[in-house]
Length: 287
Length: 332
Image (cartoon, rainbow over all chains, first blue to last red; front, top):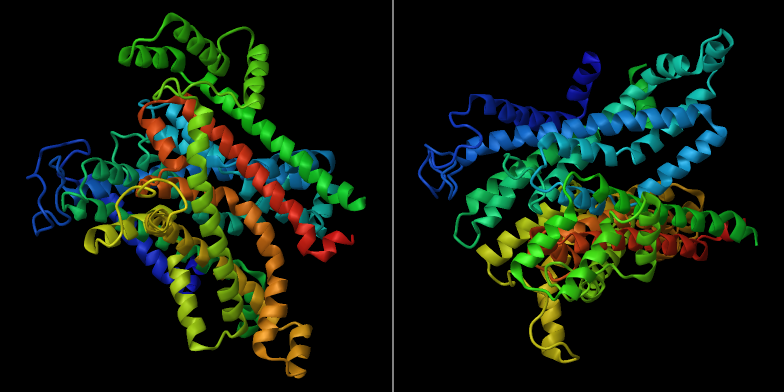
């Protein structure tokens, strides 16, 4: 694992820059624990101040320091996305492995379900749920919901992986030596899926961050908590563009671009590493 | 006949399943909510305006059907389907006597226009540029194009929209901040030009991201086509390069792109909703934002239903067009 990451860091520029950006992002999120102001504190600094040495990213019309707000926002957005990724990939891996391993009628039923679920647009459903829960939404609930809606495409990917694994020699060996199906899947097949899971987790983060920001920009997230989306929402709400206070919007927008680009670059590096064709080329280069 | 049995029929079945699941979910979600939307909506409505008793009753009845606490869960479900099939989703809460169907009907054309046009532009642009860059991977312009589009690609729609909004309405105020058109609708030059003027930035923000995505896919596909035998033969036969790219390579890379268009419709639609919110463009997204702000559940439900049915139908249509383009499906 560590060797892989070191190699990736050394040979893949995309992964290198991506992970450097991500480290900066995580440091930013960790800084929120040292913030001099509480997350909800308002009127603690002079209002509407442009960026300066004292307030790096300026202050809002509510008397909040944009830099420290941003640290909370990045942390909360990452928490929401992390939760969504864990739930979504959990369901996806399970369904994909079951339908790939059992095959036959089960596979047809589950694949049909998954295919239908892919076509259903997720944002309108999410908006409906969030609108019904308006005012009672918490960050955890948001992460949960995004996760429950984002398992179909990954599960399809895992299914095809397990389908090919099932035909391998070691599966037969395991079955003939009396291993039961759940154990075969978990003990023998799951380890092969882990690299794919890694790349998938990164793209899951991208998707979940996008949805979190989208919902919050619509005013449907947990509007009292700081997140990248709510920062944009309140910035719009207090008309920072019309009132010449660009910095209020610029900080969360720049931060989301950074996070998204960071995750994307590392996923490019990972996928290139996982691609069997380039892997073959690398092996030949070594030997 | 085999075409129908093996290709068209499964897709029709899938379309029915999608719509069934979608409508059932929109039926179930409000019922699992801890808030009673009817009481909330009635309270909100009667607080703002006085209604005649009949109107109140009619409203309550339509709310009962839609969120319904009337009868058993199954009969509620049947009622709900009846309303969906008749296209009668009751009145909007925020603009009371106007029905949801009417309001959606007037907003949807803005969305379809914006979405349709920008999708077609982005799809064509991405396909052609990608094929050119894939066929000539060593030219300087192909490298510049690739690096630019690959770094634009991961930036989400709404961020592109915000950046464009800040650049072109704030720093360089050459485009309008909100709206969809100016003047009275009609076939006059001033109205049509204002449509383009107001729609330019929203469309641009959609086109940028979608082109980048299409470009990356198309370049990868054209890169593999380039090494295939027919291209080598065409090159040996000294066909003009332009002809090889446009007549052969692009036609072959088009096939997977058509399938992918059907799959990515939902994503495009979701992107358009947010773009409309950012630019204050008077389509479904903007309607949805207002409905959310006014807690207009009827309207939110209507838009949710419509988008599920609309996207499922649109991807069905694209799938059904596929045999027209791909001879392998036709002759199977």
